[in-house]
Each structure stands twice: as structure tokens, then as C-alpha cells.
Amino acid sequence: MKKYIFLISIFALFSCNNSDENYDASGTFEADEILVTAKANGTILKLNLEEGQQLSAHEKVGEIDPKNVELQKEQAIASLDAIEQKTNSALPQIQVLKSQISAQSANISILEEQLQNAIRERNRTANLVAKDAATKKQLDDANGQIKVIQKQISAAKSQLNILKQQISTTTENVSIQNRAILSEKKTNQKKVEQIDEQLTNNTIESPISGMVLSKYLYQGEFALIGKPIFKMANLDEMTLKIFVTGDQLPTIKTGQKVKVLIDNGAGKTKELDGNIYWISSKAEFTPKTIQTKNERANLVYAVKVHVKNDGYLKIGMYGDVKF
Image (cartoon, rainbow, N blue to C red; front, side, top):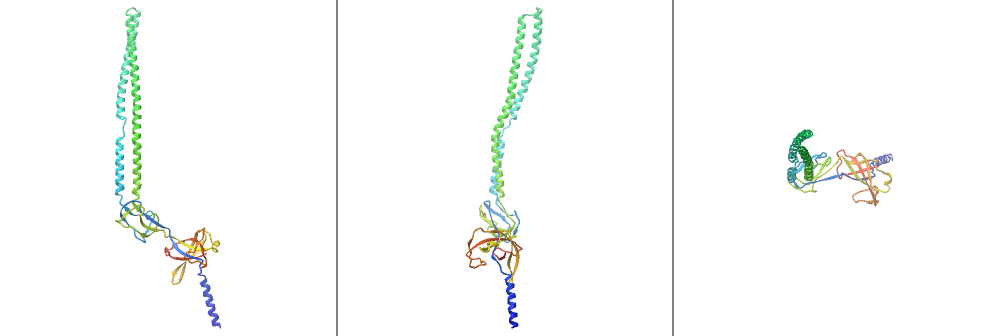
């Protein structure tokens, strides 16, 4: 009798230990997979990556032949040089005008000196007329000579002002012409900048830190814009997608810490820390590949749990969760 009681106690103890291994939900591990596609057309000149390789964010792993884009850039630069040669300079015309201004200023100086001489001569003649040593006609002629010279000075100064105005007009006209040409230059400069941006698309690089899961193209093959080159994912933190029934839903919330159990071999389990970060707001029919705590449940809610990967977690691996 004692023997049977001992066996029953052992069985009960085993059952209690086994109940600790119960789980509240199960699912499979996922990762946010990123499909890296070609951003340019051309032959792949090099592609230094293999499946399973760990890449750093923005690490350059390959190059698509940039020859066609480089030729477009050379053409755009040549157009810029041609536009530069179209621009005019007002300097030659201004130099001619300044030379004319200098000559006109010298002419005005000569006329002003002649005017001073004419005034002195008129004053001398006026004194002689007062003394009856000269005739009234001689005085009138002297006054007439002064008026002639004054008119010449006035005309010369007017011409000088016109020449100065021509400098401003010439400068403004050339500036207007150059603005139209330079507006075309800016357009071509923007085109060169766009081509430089296009050239960056010929570099194949990793958008994130992570592992290469699949490789679709190889060196020497022709890439088309949008065509997949490789697929990768960040496996440092995995997502365990589980499903819970309606009666379990009130017992969980986002941000809640949970225990994640994975198979550790030889019938043992390994426990990891998890964090619920997403709970579906809508119920769905139970997926055929998913088991729930209540096998009779028809509707379940998807839940996602973040789990830090210690290196043993793999995409598609099963995991259990204890709330």
C-alpha cells in the first residue's frame, strides 16, 4: 500500500512540474524583412555579399555601371560651358565711352579757357570804347564771341552727360541680356545636380544593419529599376506573432512583460523575456497553422511580442508565451 502511495506522489509531483511548462499562447518568430531593389538600370559591376552575411547600415556592397549617367553629366557640363561663353561684358563698350568722356572733358576745359580769354578781351574792348579808342561794333563782336563759346561749352557738357548716361544704359542692357542667359545656366546647373543624385543610385548599399536572407542578382547581370537585388532583415530583435482568444484579451495589454519559451533541445525549454507591443483591434478566424489555449476558439486576436535575439532565434521558429 505504501508503495502505491509513493508512486502516486511521484506522479503528482511530476504533474506539478509539468504544469509549470504550460503556456498561454504560441506562434512563430518573424522579422521585418527589407527587399533591396535596384535604383538604376545597368550591368552590376560588383556585388560583394552572400546569404547569411551581416551588413552595417549604409554599407556599400556593390555598384551598377554608371557610364550612361556619366555621359549625361558630361553633356550637361558642356552645355554649361557653352552658356558661359554666351554671356556679354559691358567693359569694352564702357571703355570706349570713358575715352569719349575724357576727350569731351578736355574739350570743355579748352572752351572754358577760351571763354576766360574772350571775357578779358571783351572787358579790354569795353574800356577802349569808354575812352573812344574802340568802336561799338568791336564790343558787340567781343560779346558775340563770348556767347558762341558759352553755347559750345553748354553743348559739350550736354554731350558729356549723354556719354555718362550711356555708360549706365550699356551696363543695364548687358545685365538684362546676361540675366536671361544666366537663368538658362541655373537650369543646367540644376540638371547637373540631379545627375549627381542619379549617380548615387548606382551604388548598392545596405539600408539597415542586418543579415542577408536571400540574394537574387549576381555580378555581371543586368539590373532594372525596382528589380530585387537581395533581401535582408535585422535579427537583433525578433517578433513573435501569437494569437489569443477573446477571454484572454482582457488579461493582456501593450507594454506588458511576458515570458517566451523556446525549444532548447532534449525536451527542454529556454526562457526569454518578451514585451507585448501590438494587439490587434479586430478578431479573425483562427489560422489553421496556429494552436490556441482553447482549441474550440473560432475567433482570435493577433498579438506581437518583441523578443531580444540571443542568436538562437530564427525566422519561422515556434515559441510559446506565458502571460
